[in-house]
Image 1 (cartoon, rainbow, N blue to C red):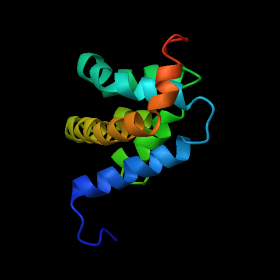
Image 2 (image 1 turned 60 degrees about the vertical axis):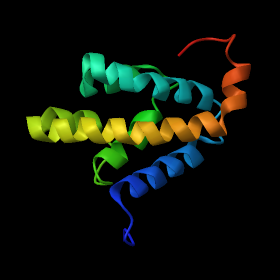
Image 3 (image 1 turned 180 degrees about the vertical axis):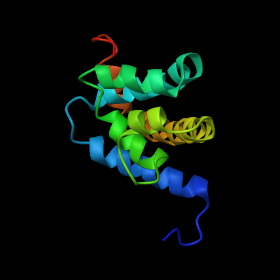
Length: 126
C-alpha cells in the first residue's frame, strides 16, 4: 500500500488528506489555529492533556480524529482511549508521530488557508 514511500511521505500525504477534509468547514480557521498551537501544548502538558484541551473546544474538536487516525495507523480515531490504555512506549511513539504529522499539517494549512487566517487575525482566538 505504501508504494515505496517513506514514512515521512506517507505522513505528508495523510496531513494533506486532512487539509482536504477541513477545506469546506466553516470553522477551518479555528482548527488551523488550534493545530498551530498544539505542538507547544504537547511539549508543555503532554499528548493526552493537549488532545483533551482541543477536544474540549467545540470549534476545534474536528482536529482530533484527523490526528488520531494517523497516530493510530488508521485502526481508530480515539487517541485519548489509546493513551489511557497504552504503555509508556506507545505514548512516546504516539507523541513523536503526532508532532511529526502536525509539522506537515501546519505547513499545508499555512499555505492553503493563509487568507482565512489573515482576515481572522482581528477575530476571536482559539
